[in-house]
Image (cartoon, rainbow, N blue to C red):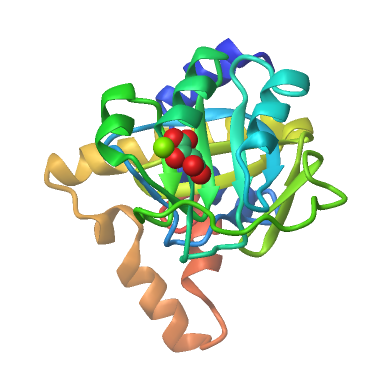
Length: 236
Ligand SMILES: O=C([O-])CC(=O)C(=O)O
Ligand SMILES: [Mg+2]
């Protein structure tokens, strides 16, 4: 899937739809930790992962831009979830934006918030801190090959999606399948929401009374079993 198609299709989706698609497809749901938040309200990004394992210097980001990243990619910065130093600021963000990348996801902190707001590049991070790094650790063996974000190791075979709900990773080779599933979940949920607005409760739509009656007969019957039986969407 090319970058233009990815951006266009994600414009009408959310990371929640994509997460539900992963569950439906029995693929791992690889969310960044919930504390990784969009710095700018409404910011949205989708692109191939351009990973960088930060160890105290911005040179690694410049190296990724110089040698590895392509327009549309998203710089994914692994700073080990550190809360004692910011590792991306306005200069890195401006350089990233000028290289045509779509945004920055940081498992760590940013700084230079006022300037970042003016740049407008979607940045997702654990928050802000005035100080940059005061250390320089040895380069990681996978410095520009992979990044760890929370529980997940991601590399250039992955796509990253960010919106107001947070950040999620998908394998690029399953993008078509998972986006198509997410679109069908979105459409089902939209129809359900329209019907609630129109006066038909979600319980009525989902046959909730029948589900409760079945569960009274068979305590092992779960709501999820019931939803699968009727093709409803809400949890996955
Ligand atoms: O010094 C840093 O770590 C990053 C920084 O402030 C910038 O990119 O402007
Ligand atoms: Mg700075």
